[in-house]
Image 1 (cartoon, rainbow over the protein chains, first blue to last red):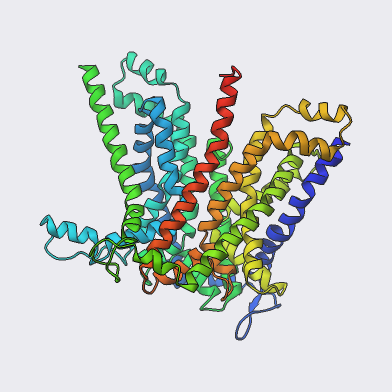
Image 2 (cartoon, each protein chain N blue to C red):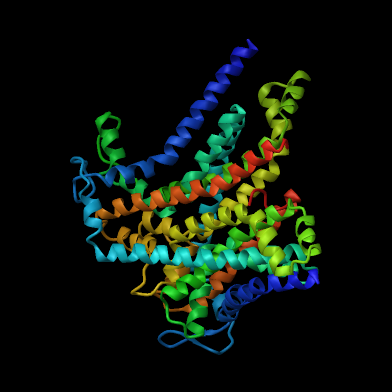
Length: 280
Length: 271
């Protein structure tokens, strides 16, 4: 009886995900093996051309750039986020929950709006340039936007909370006496952190890396807005093939590549942390 | 010596936190500040004005986009609340093979990059001949809202004593009645905080909406995105500030039920 009511409760979810997740994703997989239509749309003719085309030098270069940006973003968010999480844990307990809230709030506000805020700040006639000129630190206006550096900056900024939160969670679980014990046994503070604390937070770090790397590879509006038209990433390429290129099968093949990449990162993470997805 | 060193470290940590948080909030502050900027090209600061807020209510496009956003977020969250809550209960209670698959598929929208989800929705809608518009937006948003609510409710269900509902059943309540009268009030805070979170996500979504939106049904973020690529009318700043207010409100409200719960629990003498 109880079992039956459980199944009845599950039915809407099962039906919805079958229609709205399983079917569309399955269709993208099928689409990636179809031929593109003459003007737009698809022809139901099986082909492997789309996957072969992934190896074209232009596509390979964009793929390589995306992976590179993803890797740099992950590294930078780690270098900036780990000390941040560590500094949070060092605060008194009462202040910690306030800090946590302060880190989470921007994360719930529109990413688009925050990128736009940076565009106001960083553009050539913007506030940062004005300030630097006023202080006499620069003599000519600097072009901060429309290059790969700007894209990287935008990515690190947007994804930093994804690194801070899981690292913070794993650090908070540690007992402060651990480090004290290490220091009582004669380890210097840095040594105590590095050899005792850090290894215990590796699952949190791995969780953060996956949560940063996956969106970084797929992010498309940051590169679009802060990088100008010139900096195409995997996400931009998909949206290009989808809209301007009118080549849905190619967009589908790229999507499948990205899904594979996502699952691979999640798998690597599970393997090395031996746990669930941390805070998420 | 060691104590002093510790204090210096604490101060350094505090400074780092302050600097980091300042940078996190800087762009948000700039957008808010510029919504009161007199200059109409939005580059130089020429003085304080609330003119753009007035202009906002004269722009049909912006108002319509905002109305669409609110409509989509409300309907999607409502639908996702029903499906996600029932699903969480079902996942917790049903014992059968394939449950993991259902759960995995339902949480997939959180894992897969947004652009792929948007693309998949778009090609799917075009395959079944569904015209892009408010309806497709609602279908897409409901799908990515479901996991936020489901995960929230599931974690609440784990800590829930099943004997409450069993007692109701023993007293003669039918399964639906027992669920509605006993379990739902107990998991209501989790549903509510999940819904508010999903609401904030739906209200801010650009990427997925970009793919499933029709020409006459843009949402506010999609409208902003299209404007950012060309020129930005100053009223955009005003609208961003207002949506920011709505998001903050939703997030603040989503934290309230949990707070009360904690207080109640600690009053009951639990740690």
